[in-house]
Length: 174
Image (cartoon, rainbow, N blue to C red; front, side):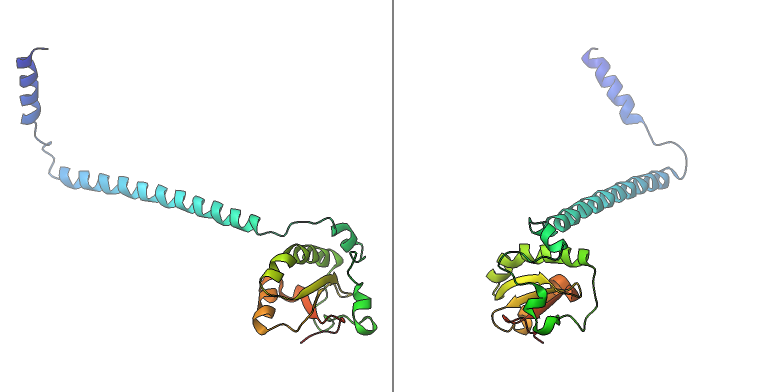
């Protein structure tokens, strides 16, 4: 194509006018608004999926990890160095006798999580000596000194009513 032919083609394009329809501009604006809305919807969907993945990843990484003492805890035997729950409390009365009873499996699961978290909890200042399942299925955490309300709040926030606190001799602490 020669230069003159290209100029003629460009003039033809410049001479074009919108179609004679009276609502052409309104339809074009509506179409562009709909396209933008679809893009926003897709963007929100992708953002929602990314948020769900991030929350799921965070939840999975914070799950308690099983330890090798899981089988002994499930069978009711205490780990080495940890007194049996009945021996740890006066007359076999657990510190969780006023709270709800849980199954042995629930206690074993909570106990696994508590034992895995003991190093981190002691770094946070909790004076934890040991942990064992009590007769009512509540994990009895033995501490060397009474806990402050803030320290008790850390345990309650993590484990709720599944954990009770006892002193070094196994007597329940309020």
